Length: 303
Image (cartoon, rainbow, N blue to C red):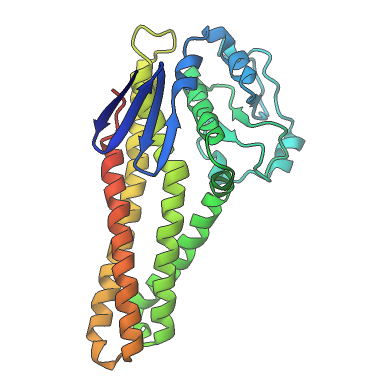
């Protein structure tokens, strides 16, 4: 028997005990493995995760100590040497108690998908990272490649977008130059595409995972930790705010540049005028789609 539940544009399908989420970002996410892992004894958490094909390692520590959590007993620690070879940057590790690294990521030369954790990681964060592994395993081959490249693509796109926008905002005369108009438009288009990808594979996952765990981990669960659950909701809200800022930046750039170009309308060649009108129409439509997805994600909750 199959039932559908609609919540703010998000579809939940429950079939034969499975829990499948269709997110606003054109992804179907099967939460069933996460629900199953929550049935394992807490002491066997790492062993249960490894049985699914995902390895777990402790991050190197200059003051290595016996981990507080019993479920981390016997988890191998990465050596400083091996960790340095992984070439993980601050983007990956800033403030993290755990991080999921797919085996296909060229950064790390891992034989299996892996979760790297700090000594003080809690069980819910461990399950959070396992959820990333589950969702990654459900991606197509093409999407797995996009997942790996998304972070660097958005970094590059933001850098170019900020440079182009700042240059014309500081010196409006730049927008009189057709090359600057072209470069700013291309920068905005590239930013929308890269931002949509990073939200689809990263930021939206963070929100969906935390809010799903809010429902899957009941107060009577052996994994329940009220403080961590509250932190999880704050974390989800912070990711939603990051998405809102992206939408706001893009909307401002589009509105402002359109306003400045409107002043120049009589001086534009017909061909460029037509091209710009077409590009802005498409750009604004994509920004609206981006904003609508964000609005749906804000209302996400697992019933």
